[in-house]
Amino acid sequence: MADISIIIPCYNVQNYVMRCFESLQNQTIGLDRLELIFVDDASTDHTWERLKEIEQMAPESVCIIHLEENMRQGGARNIGLSYASAEYIGFVDSDDWVEPDMYEHLFKAVATSGSDLAFCRHVRDTGKGDLYLSQKAKMDYYAEHYQRKDRTLYIRTDEQRTDFIVSNVIGYGVWDKLFRKNFLLDNEILFPEHLAYEDIYFGSVVYLYAKQISIVERRLYHYFINDESTVLVRNRAHHNDLFQINYAKWDTYIRRGFLERFRDALEFDFFMTFFMSGMKVFALRFDQIPFDGFMELKKGTLERVPHIKTNPYCQSHISDFYKLLLPLLEHTVTPDDLAQIQQAFLKYHKLI
Image (cartoon, rainbow, N blue to C red; front, side, top):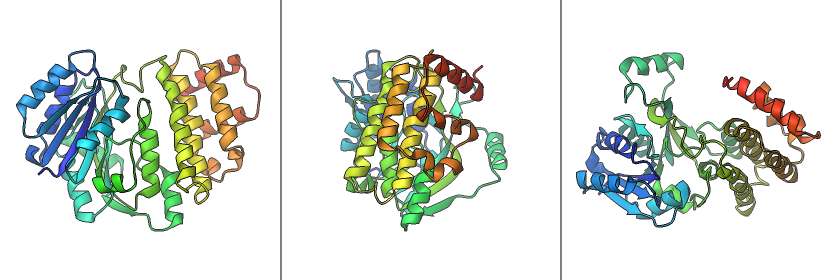
């Protein structure tokens, strides 16, 4: 039986999924210790034909599933999780790829420590250079980051959990982590379905329950800069899913009894993933910041966190640039104002 089930949601990735598979096929931990679950999310290209080819290449390690209805990545991952038989769960996006030793390092870290999950670093990759990192690139990274050592985070007290939530030290992504399956199942941590930005919800719930996290200070995951990917494609309505995702997250904080216990931390967390992330998405993913979208961000923020400016983390954990957005919650903002704000965003992120 495999040690790790890796779930790979696939939608119209006929040109990329083989690269992803080959990086998993070549894992130093051994393909026989992996269960690769590819979920075709009702693709309209030749993705399913590619997956059938992959299944034939490694029938004992590969499971392929075809969905008739598109459920987006969250739904496809939930389906994959229901098929997973291994003790540990990984997630890889089908246009990305991983270093040959990624799962060897993550498995060693999480299995020997008894952690709920292991986390590694990633590299944003255009796919135009070498597929894997050279030894020099790895050494340069270690030198740049002062040769950080692998470590384990322990969350034992409310104060430690507060710091953990506010620090966002392991991000919200799922592709740079290896989870103990029972940790996910026991705490009912699943993805929202039929929505984009599902990682924000899933990752936020992980922050509520994780008690031990192994951090592997190596760049092991290649995040492909694909302009047609869900989060990078421009002027698409699904970017508005950020509203539903964050509202669902807020309701979960209340329903599960965490909001009162960690109010300052969770209000700050909501504000960052809702208002601040929403402004960034609207500024960078649209030709013009949608005025209705901005008004929804403002309304949703003031309804849930009306006193966010007095939150203790707003001064200590927000960059100076993003602090400039706080007055937008208090003042009347016009479309012309939003146009100027968008230009400031583009300059800040060096896009103009």
